[in-house]
Amino acid sequence: MDNLRFRPRRLRRNPAIRGLVRETRVSKSSLIYPLFVEEGTGIAAPIPSLDGQFRYSPDTLPRALEQVCEAGVPAVMLFGIPAQKDPEGTSAWAENGVVQQALREARARFPELYLITDVCLCEYTSHGHCGLLRGQEVDNDRTLEVLARTALSHVQAGADMVAPSDMMDGRVLAIRETLDRNGFSETPILSYAVKYASAFYGPFRDAAGSAPGFGDRKGYQMDYHNSREAVREALLDVEQGADILMVKPALAYLDVLAEVARATGMPMAAYSVSGEYAMIKAAAKSGLIDEASAVCESAVSIFRAGADILISYYAKELAGWIDEGRIG
Ligand code: PBG
Image (cartoon, rainbow, N blue to C red; front, side, top):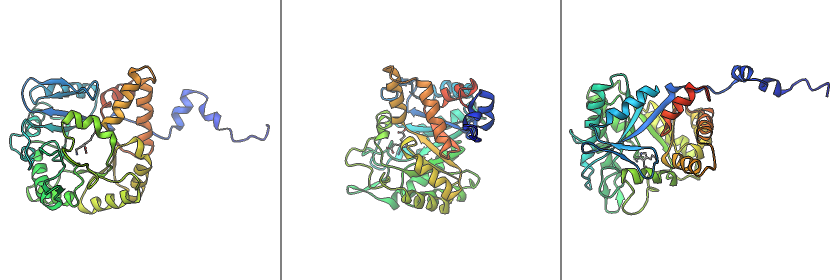
């Protein structure tokens, strides 16, 4: 084999050379940690479907945020669990709603932490759908106004960025116009631009009590047979003023992530959702896989596919593994 001039193994022989030629670099500055805030006081309740995750009330949330800051994770994404739900989801935009309370608390105590909020109605509606209903159907256009109002109330309470996850058509524009009109033209929108109707949201819906009371979300979330549609959705959101695009879930949609990143040139976020977390947790707990190795490999694969940002329930642990040099 004297003429084997190109030997890929030369670049794998020790950690130093592997480090020099590494194609994907990961950093704690790319991580977002999702957190559930529940209306009430003194709550720090383990979430049965998400082993290791908790629901906090606004007064106990600072404890959780302290851990996030200590881990070096720069940003959180807040989801609200209100005390009262109604068909119109009015607690989503209430001045003293649970997310609004949490934001004021967090803003005052953690000025450096970047606060993002999920903007959707499914946690606030008694029927569990992401929009207002007309009969048994979600009324897209009537929902837009409520979403915009919700986003504005979050920003007024201290959110640095809003992330609409409802999948109504036109919501990025509705939110952008409302924020601009109210003096928040500098506040970015992270759009859940490409969100598939996925079985991997199951543990989240248990955590947030947001499973639809009837039907499913296939009328507004995407069909997983499609990827060209993802590019169309993404481009529409760019036109409407989205600053960052998200693909969700992450692992089963890496092809979509790569394609949307290429087609739009936009900053890309990937959401490694509750079912992805729960699968690794369960397999690790049964001794079937090594948790840290599996999480690190998954996270790097998401960045390799084109994500700039990773939203993960493992964000704090990932930050630690990056510090240890397991990935980086
Ligand atoms: C709200 C929302 C959901 C998730 C994020 N925002 C649930 C859904 O669409 O049913 C899922 C997140 C996860 O599974 O971790 N619409």
